[in-house]
Length: 435
Image 1: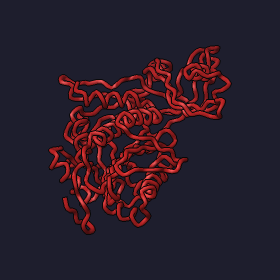
Image 2: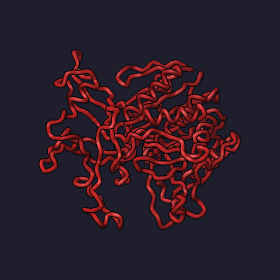
Image 3: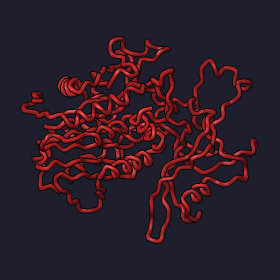
Image 4: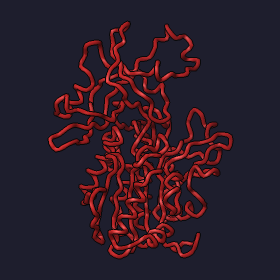
């Protein structure tokens, strides 16, 4: 395995929750010399500086400031969250079985049956009481700890003929036997705090599968959270690898949260995190709202979230002319109803950047008789008026507990984002670009 692929595998393995994905991103940014800003501080930003800021511990924005005034920007956005089960209560005794179950609630739309009969862990964040006040900390119970057991076929003879899952009765995880230690005890021990100092948490179930190459030549890989940590990790890598950027260009990488449940949170695309960051950094550089509008018009935003590859068993599910293939290159996503933000101008501009960089691209559109989902781009467009397009990488089994994608596409996205950051282009009139 090459170093680049291993780096993305490490990112996928580390990002067991949105808070862990953000923490891993921060670790990589700081290793590359990026300086942390706090939203509660007054920002002091130097021309040529490199900075990052977080919100809610689960969203990150990092940016490279040009030496002169900001005249435009390149922004690459992705998201940190994935469909899973959020933990509501630490234990419910079930007397007839002598067992204890956790109570969970589904987060995002998922292939529910894929969570059955596999070892599960717990990860997220917890808030603890300290001498100074309250502290949020990531926590990962990294062990085979829970399972959601199937009902035996002897009790459910029609299960292979189709099943409608009831999350409340069919998909609550087995924790232990009555009298076993409660979840709180394990969390407190993991964090090294007294049980009474553990206050609240945001925790979720985690599949224990690690990213792994598959195929006779390792041409595919299997991992949880490919949607959307593959895009998050590859766009971050391209952003960090980018060399000199065009004069007057701000380059920003962002990973937002809560895309899988509509993005309508303060750390999501429908919140103010990105615009707050852009406004504050321009203000710190002595530039105002007029400059913000000018930069928005002279910018380009990539909304990076994976797309559906043509399924080998069900090619009929894909549009005959717009079905991307695994390892076929970066996917440009289009939709007549504007669920994706791509238009002719943004697609042409990005396509020319990729052509010059030798990066293959392919198109994705749903069948005309099959509605598709949206992503963070069209929601971020409510507050940011920059030209935008939706891109991603082709994958199979989207929203399964474990998904499949093409190994070569990792390099395709990294090279595309690096070229996106480095290639000089300028909007000279509405819809007219000089490259």
